[in-house]
Amino acid sequence: MTDDVLVVHGGTPLEGRIRVRGAKNLVSKAMVAALLGDTPSRLFDVPRIRDVEVVRGLLGLHGVKVSDGEEDGELVFDPSNVESASTDQINVHAGSSRIPILFCGPLLHRLGHAFIPDLGGCHIGPRPIDFHLQALREFGATVDKTPEGLHLSAPNGLHGTKFALPYPSVGATEQVLLTAVMAEGVTELRNAAVEPEIIDLICVLQKMGAIIKVHTDRVIEIQGVKRLSGYTHRPIPDRIEAASWAAAALATRGHVEVLGAQQADMMTFLNIFRSVGGEYEVTDLRPPRGGRPGQEGGIRFWHPGGELNAVALETDVHPGFMTDWQQPLVVALTQARGLSIVHETVYEQRLGYTEALNSMGANIQVYRDCLGGTPCRFGRRNFKHSAVIAGPSKLHAADLVIPDLRAGFSHLIAALAAEGTSRVYGVDLINRGYEDFEAKLADLGAHVERP
Image 1 (cartoon, rainbow, N blue to C red):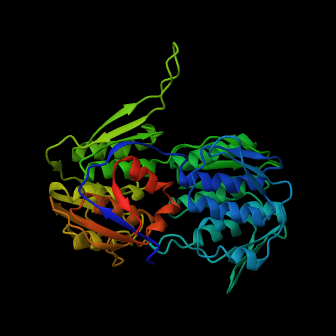
Image 2 (cartoon, rainbow, N blue to C red):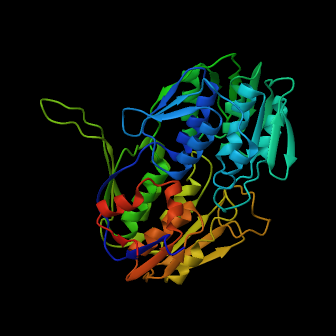
Image 3 (spheres, rainbow, N blue to C red):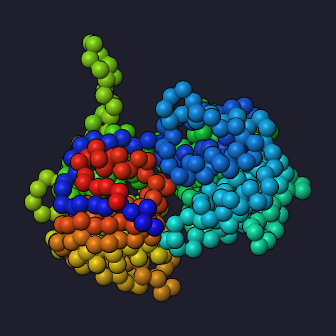
């Protein structure tokens, strides 16, 4: 663990410019979608993060040739020789990511069977795969649970179905999309997730030849087709990473321009950011003109000085306030005057990171009650899923151990905002979702180092 630590000298505002690439929550799913094509696919702006390496490894085990393209961040997928992988080979990736469950539909279409190892991911709640398995059974798959994982087969092929999710789960919606596009007949999915990354995945599948209609009231209709070809796609930028750097700018009283960030997918976050007292400016793309170079667009975020305002917010599925936004923003809320209230309605165990913030001088109380008006699945289930943040609090340095990806970045922000020198352990976990974050910190003038 001593090699997995970052020493952070806090108290310096972050100043400068960084760039975000394709959304983590789209890129890995688009990589899986390449399995469905019978010609090569090209994906641009792929971030160098651990989740991408996990999916690249799994694709390689199943015979998909993955190579770097000519452009930085470009990957090329050749699925012409898809084959079975041994259980032992696949189990090498057991516990490293939750993406393998999304291989089920494509592998059932290509091979007629699939094996899925034990799943990992961040420990922010059970996130059961029951929705996934129920959907696959509706399509006609059989699922055999064994100690090493799940064995799936489709002896009679996969067929379209009508399916309603009890909750608009992003992962389960992706599962249905990746399975339904080549299932015989029509599939109707009700109560589907409609996050921007879901819509972008639909764009990928449509480029491949899929027929997908997005109706009102979270209804998606998929007409199965017999074959899909490869795609060429540039994904939407990572709105989670962009918001994380925005929160870091606010918490450290800094000024950060996030190139690549897009206003449309961040509108809910931008409203809260402004309500808290942060300022931002959208800088649109400017093409080359009259011999002058062009400029990539993005969003500049900064702390304008003075006091920040306490707010009340609730996380929710899109278009609500994204659950992955709340952890970085809460660090900034420790610096706001008054009582801020956060009601987490997506993951039941996502407020555990606040203990570390309290050890640094924050004043955060967590409650089992629903402190908000959004209908919530956790209200009577004994989960501490609401938080009250009293501020402003003077943060001081501490030794921190990162529990999960987004909490890890919030711990990092807290260390940057605190007075003194902190040691952040388990920092390599941040590489799962933040590309080159140490280099970006250096670009923003942060004083960090490996011991």
